[in-house]
Length: 261
Image 1 (tube, rainbow, N blue to C red):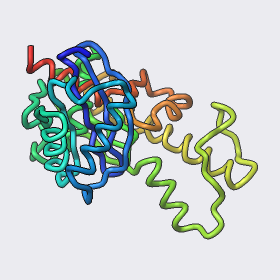
Image 2: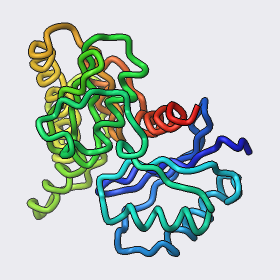
Image 3: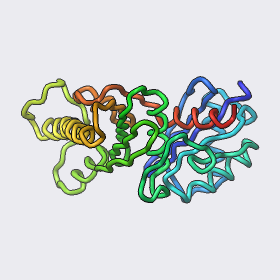
Image 4: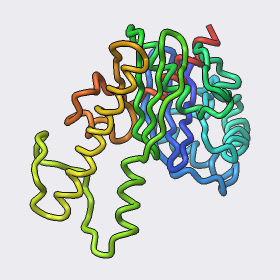
């Protein structure tokens, strides 16, 4: 393996995505439940097994890059990687500088995931005005004008909305988030009504909010979508210009190698 191969970690509230990267491309990725109750040893052993499955040795890595919104996970992963891989973890944005001017009123309040995806979107977009929509545990809208991170919106997530419906409804049928057509129509069953309501409802939310944000930002915007449900929503959402499934991992890759040239 390349001596420039690095580990990537996207530590979210629900899941942690683990990926591999060289300077030029993202490799395979795996998802584990985020478990801050675990130990450095338990996480280290899981990481060793993931690397084995992916065809890597524990000696292959120059380091690791992390975006984390779960602070208790940070020392666990740091200790796991140092012990089992003998390399250093760096955390964005603290030790992986991102070339964006953070205009948040309290800059330290912005989640690392939001900054990394905004940074990655800026690197791949030539548009002056950019919105990155991340369909994660929450649905976030992050706005970039030029090289300035302007802030954004935090809205309910697709999965959290689904769980909220399930917990409040005694006879709720299975929600598959699958629809048969990209044209909305009255649902013919409760399951169909729920699936269409969620998919088209989130598509309409993205269309409406992006239009309003565009007016505030002062011009036409490019909208990049990422996150687990991005492709499903993009199929029926005219506001989404492109889907980038690995945008956050790409941001970590670009940030790491940008600081290690």
